[in-house]
Length: 174
Image (cartoon, rainbow, N blue to C red; front, top):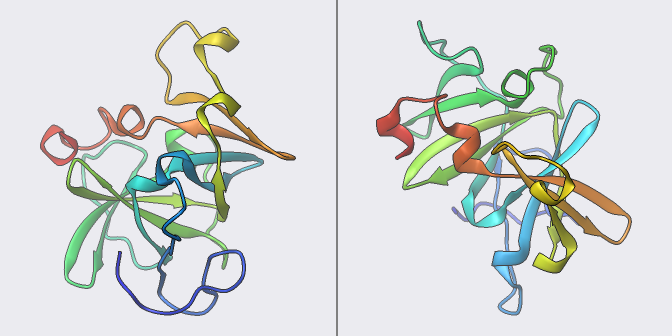
């Protein structure tokens, strides 16, 4: 993560290109999830994957890519593939708004961007507060690893590597 500015209460800066997530020494990063919205649902991704959150920017389209892959962005000189999670989840596309952002992840040392409708917050969800998808009747491997609960919040926890499988070139995610 790069140092850029102090985040506002809630963890995200409001008017700059990207935001750094800052943790205290006593935070258990393994139990922390960045929650975000896609359509009407809340999802979570392990914070260990997240490198930064950037505002929407020009995406260069790529021919013959998976339908959910919008293209690539040039982020401070680094070319990063970008996937729209609405399309990956089989939802209708939607015009991007001022709340639409790209969550930049590092997966197996490869940067990947995810377009989401909005970011919510970072939640600490211990393993005993996550119901696995299999326990809820999901027999087939899914991109949803489980459902995390914390206070009055509820989010589908995404299996990042499974979600990216088959969407980007094999060399870019493995």
